[in-house]
Image (cartoon, rainbow, N blue to C red):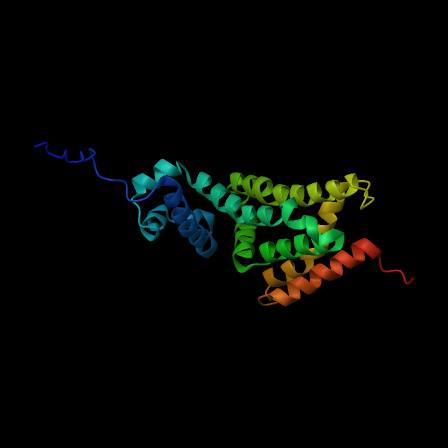
Length: 215
């Protein structure tokens, strides 16, 4: 009679979850700390505790606080980049695509957490220049490049005539978000709802595409 072999047990403690999933949990906990307490006061031990990991695991995945902050910003912007995927916008037409992009940008930059991060960057940039550099590269440059890429595609297909897509992308971002964002940051405006953001995106798109002169 042949005995069935028992499966060998692997050595060491089994890994509870993969590193990618652990990173996600840590980043969510870190974002909350950064938004609530700022960069300098954000406590790595508390982040690890809230994420349910050891500080050893946290430092293995994110060797420095700067690395952790960069990932927080990168993942937040990634949501906007996904919204701007050309396959998602192709069937919307020029106006529909632009409204979609501007609304997605508005939801990103006018959210409570993003405004908290902007306050953090402005308050701590002098002491921590790496924070400002990360925000500039991962947030401002990436969102602008995403919108610029869409504009260049429209120009290449003859749908728009734009001399400087990079400059135009910056102007569209400013028109969409600058005034309401400042109002929220200064406490003059509360939470901006989805309908208001969509309506502003439509107005910005119409002014850009058709102008304001009577016809």
